[in-house]
Image (tube, rainbow over the protein chains, first blue to last red):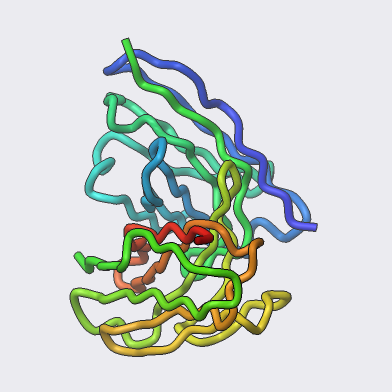
Length: 116
Length: 109
């Protein structure tokens, strides 16, 4: 069955960096577009970034553009999110998600807390 | 950027009631509209895709309708296990992106 397992979350100071990973299994990873979606504590869902199956195309929400970089390694069935210049408002659970239109498969999420 | 306005933000209804949630897009999105259910501490679950298609395994009491800018999500007979927050979500192809509505928290009266 499809599994998406995020890791790399934690506590980081404002201005710091963090790299999230998502390990995929149960499907042909290289066939699918992938996304990162986040949810601040007690708040709604916010799409963060998207990457095409071959990494040829990426897109970002305005709130993270220029600070976050999405990437993938199809040989390792892994998705990444490099987060730089982190701000308090980036505090959220970050979900790895398969597909870029209707998301059937989500990871369990990893919590990123940005605080001094 | 397309904005999604979802209402109400919360509602309280009795078991067996018909529950309706609306979502309005700031511009025509055809039928590129999905609905999710999220329970506390869990990832969202896709219920309806492309405005009116029921995802496999989802009970038939859930339904969706609409196109263009105005969309409706309905629970025909509210059950205790339906207590959750529901989100609409539109998707764009050029460039690819997703936008979620603000969510509707559904509680039992």
